[in-house]
Amino acid sequence: MSLTVTMIAQAIMFFVFIFLCAKFIWPWLMRQIEARQKTIADGLAAAERGRQDLEQASKQTAQMLAQTRQQAQEIIGQADRRAAQLLEEAKVMARTEGERLVAGAKAEIQQEVSRAKEALRTQVAALAVAGAEQILKREVDAKAHAEMLRGVQSQL
Image (cartoon, rainbow, N blue to C red; front, side, top):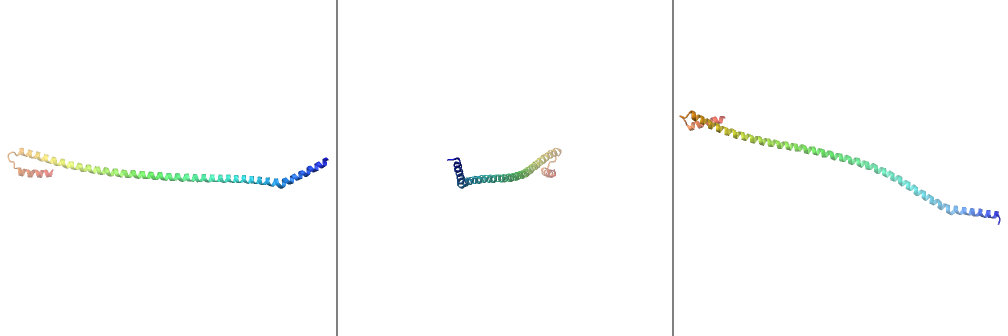
């Protein structure tokens, strides 16, 4: 065999190899590459969707947090108003109770003053009778003097 026949045989084998590669291996290889590209593209799209979902969830979380803070402020405001209302009610009740106690004490004082006046009247009347007895030792009319003392006692 000569060098030319070997070169021609190698050239034919090379073209057969290229033909078989182009017919069978190249399409299969391209399908694998396209499938891999599609998988990578799907992964990137999923990552982008995940990033967008994360941003949306972050916005929703911030919005919910702001709403929760606002509700907490409203609840605190209501509690403050209720506390002020309870405090005011307690003040009114304490004032009412104090006024009732003062009125009771005034009534008791008035009764004590009345009793003291009555006791004083009785003592003054007894003193007046004793003084009158000493002045009028000669002439003592118990009925007339008792009537006169009652008049003096009612004036006091």
